[in-house]
Image (cartoon, rainbow, N blue to C red; front, side, top):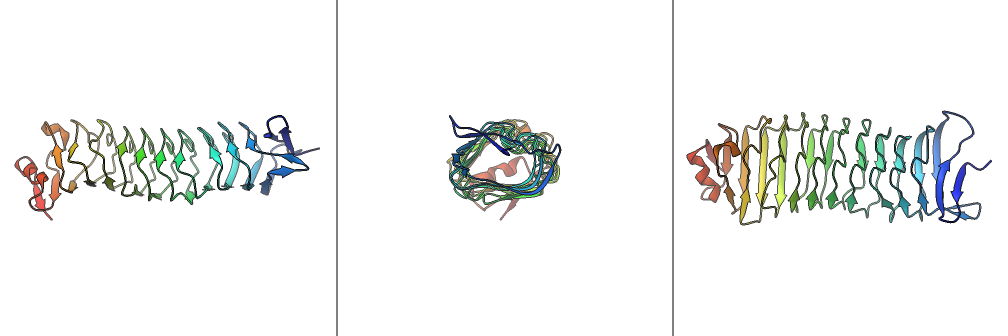
Amino acid sequence: MDDFIIDETTNTLVKYDFPFTNAHLGYLLVPHCYYGKHIDSIAPYCFGQVQIETLVVGEGIKELQFRAFEGSHCYNVELPNGIKINEYCFFNSRLQEVTLPNDLTTIKASTFSRCKKLRSIKDYAAIETIGYQAFAFCHQLKELHFESLTSVDDAAFFGCTGLRALTLGNNIEHLGRDIFYGCDDLQDVTLTGSFDKLEADTFVEARGIKRLTLSTSADSLYIPPHCFDGTCLEEITFLGEYKPIIKERSCLPDNVLIRTPFCSPAMELGYYYPLKAI
């Protein structure tokens, strides 16, 4: 019996059919060519309940379809360069570690959402865009350090209660809503780029954040009312020559310490909040 069930009209692996129920494998390679048949993509729910310690997707496979690994028990997954990873690909799976293609630029909506055991992501330096709820409820993630991000969509790290260190790089252009909601262990956040506004809920209920640094090359930075409700923000550092646009006291927490270079436009916030020149 063939373990790999392939739709030869589309060159799609539709199922890994291991003969034993609830089997536990140490290693599995999904090849691009299998007994003369080609595998170009992997279909939704392909791996069922088979427990696989390490699964390697072979070079030449071009796509992981929508929900390809959803609910799977593949603990360590290694992906080749050039592969397309669709939405919800690993949703609610038992994934613990993933090695991404080092040419991947986008993590799509809910790709790793509810991967509650995910603790390590490798080779993600090229990522530029993080989609809606891409890492939501990844409770075991401790740290992420991006280098090339330009856009972070709504709820990207929603419910990442174990996240302690997060670097978003120096090129941020867009920040969505509820990005850090429920990140109870995340105390320090630095945002650097060309963004000119925060959304009303960008930081709402980011209960762990105590220190925030905002650095942008934009001319101004709009901070909406109640932007930091539900946080424990103690100090905020404004770096750059931009003017913070704050239209009412509710835009920042009472008694938050403002840190900014001497003579910067943010110095005027000293009329309303404690101020420290740096």
